[in-house]
Image (cartoon, each protein chain N blue to C red):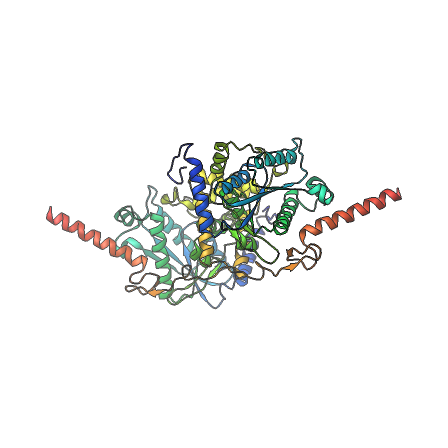
Length: 306
Length: 306
């Protein structure tokens, strides 16, 4: 790990990850051992490694897998669910919640994207659905904390995109902890200071079987372009990503960002599901299904006419 | 100009630059026709083009050339001064101030860098000296405004560097206008929304003879690295730099940045020259010459002992 000027052997490496995750959890006030944590599980290395680390550290961590109905010629969602279930079987004291979006709402990501008529990209729809369902299960299950496996590479790329377009609202909310608000569980990212290769090494050393493939919809996503740019910069100057992210957190702590009305518009409860939204009627999640129902209605009309 | 979806012929191009410079000057409240403007002239395309544009628009603009004693095997400073003087001769109503740093203070950039014993990079020393002298001549000459030729490529690279390290003080001060403070003239950048190729095209079409070479000290400067990164991003998505800079300005207007004490520390008058500084005694400019005098004193002692 050139940015830490540190080399570790396979015996001590997992302990190093555990120690620093614990340190980050305390430093940023993420949660206490008394709280119940819901870990969002994708079936990839980061989320499974995070769940493993939290359980090893003795935290009360359950998992949530959201099946999004993505196939991409490799049964992507099915394969991911299988990895999540196989991992959960290692820890009998833990629970894995599974939500199947197509079963619960009548359509998976490919169908929802198709029916949006090119208005929305799959990644945007997927993000909306995941955020809503994670929050729903957290609140219904009495979890006060929602943990995701975002690593430093993810956070640096996210920050890069937010800064390139100066998305003030996102900059205000990005960080290791997003405090709970009315109807919204606290969100935490305990791995936000680990490089991707560091979480990957942990998953490998712990023998965690995870999905290697990127989501079939990810090709061409701007986050991947930003990751490439940052990779080049990191090669030229090791530690660039960490410095970029940490100096951002310092600026935040310093009070440099102001929650203007534009960056932090007032929230209302969604008329349908009750989750907070900046819209005056339906939240972005409920609008997806409303639009889908309308589209289906139109199709039915057309086919009964024809 | 793919980012504006616009093509212009050689006859209409200079008029386009004039029109938009005037628009930017008004939009950002840079200065009025009643004010006297001092344009910082490097001898390169941007500063000479800016001086030309301001004179064409009928503003009261004089020039300032600062000879920094840089040779680099190509008599860099001498050649730049010659270009500045040749340009000034085109406009009999205008005045070119010339400051020769080595003559005025006893050492140019190469000597100052050498004597700093590796503590400071030449670009950092040069920046300090230029900022001080530009401000001094502006105040002594009764100019209320100091204009520099920074273009969009310069500003985007500067912003990129400021954001990568979250330099909150610099982010707070970066923009088309830095208002005057006690002892400091207003600073403006009328070309900040033009791409480098746009100012270069203007200089070429107006037949302005300028120095093509980069400063010999610029090799390896981080600004150039940032420019390469941004160039790659601009190729992949034309308009990236403009969008990055403009959305930054919007965030500023929105009031997103807060002048914390760390970002905007209190200023004092320098004990020696009186210009504002965050230091409690001497400003960064006066410290350069104090240190140089100490070094020369030591050398004299050594040679008289030997």
